[in-house]
Image 1 (tube, rainbow, N blue to C red):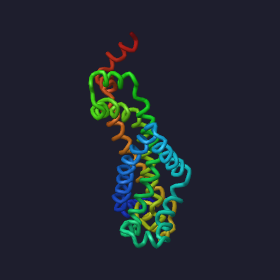
Image 2 (image 1 turned 90 degrees about the vertical axis):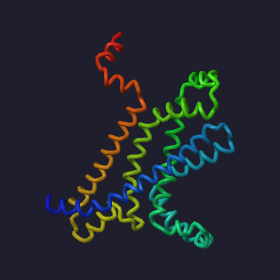
Image 3 (image 1 turned 30 degrees about the vertical axis):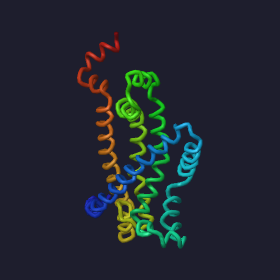
Image 4 (image 1 turned 180 degrees about the vertical axis):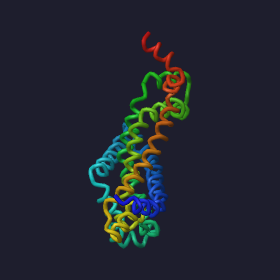
Length: 241
């Protein structure tokens, strides 16, 4: 491996990192909002909300993200009504098409993770909150959501990592994120091995930082884990007892 060329490749790919991070951040942010809405529809018990959510989740989990990206970027522009709508300034931009496709895809997966977290909240704690006179909003803020987030975070963290890697597909619609710049560099140098090793290392570094941040959040949400880490001897004695 030519390390001098690999270093030059790293310098070439680094400017593409912010676009990769921005794509992933926006997709995860918008996808979380949509996923929460879908999860609430699924557990609402109302068929008029449950079945459309089921159909959405089935469609977006059952089809490849690449196909969804092509349909949004290339397909919607085939309709004159779309080209003459107020949405066209957004839908004609590759960046926003990528964000929309990533958002719709991750929401389908994340909604099931969030639904599992909401259903994992012990019914006894909900009944206790009602007995204390808590309103639905206060109960959701203090009891349901903290417990649900704690349960869903490991699975949702995997989905966030998947989204970071999925941003590589945005290069197919001309976005010059890490994979797009890497492909351009390969077409100029024909050095496939070095370029993709460096690109893979960048994705690995991004996901390493992300996993460490998720671990910190998970520890912050779990007081018992913090207590055991601070007082390991006492925690071991409790387990033994």
